Image (cartoon, rainbow, N blue to C red; front, side):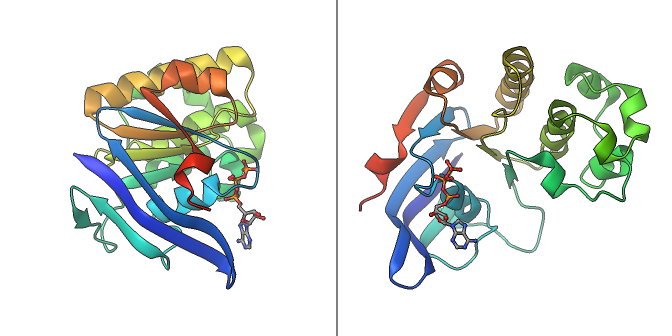
Length: 203
Ligand SMILES: Nc1ncnc2c1ncn2[C@@H]1O[C@H](COP(=O)(O)OP(=O)(O)OP(=O)(O)O)[C@@H](O)[C@H]1O
């Protein structure tokens, strides 16, 4: 299985293109790293691939087919700032289980303590929240994860812990990952191949 962006072009404002005929393939048994300058359009590409942006030129295909926009999206985007994607008025248990109910062992693997489930999002640290955001995205129907700077705000130890569990789970479940980061050293460790955004973007 593979996720493909084929000849993707996009502009927020007419005449100011951000993505120019970009093509990228993410096989479901690989981690593809993507590195590039700030403001170059990496997050925009992530949003196109995960259908947050719906109007663009080109195609996003999973095994050569367009993705059904009605059902569960098998391409899940995880953002740098997990708090922005969580309802502050919901307790963590509801935020997690809105997507699926992961087995307790998997929660434990992600280092999520039972006590955290009873808290509000603003009662957890960024790293703790990010564990929830990642686990929430690993619904059994997820086939690809688009990880947009998911560990940037974490200390080195937490960063390694989180990537370790994510990589192990993805490998077991055949989930492909696009890992976007400014951190070349991190991408060299987690990715099978690393691409430079500017080389994909035909400006
Ligand atoms: N909703 C939006 N409306 C208009 N312009 C936007 C919008 N979102 C992003 N941009 C602009 O598009 C360009 C690309 O932004 P994007 O967030 O994709 O870059 P990036 O490579 O992910 O940057 P960074 O590495 O700093 O996160 C930037 O110039 C940004 O200001």
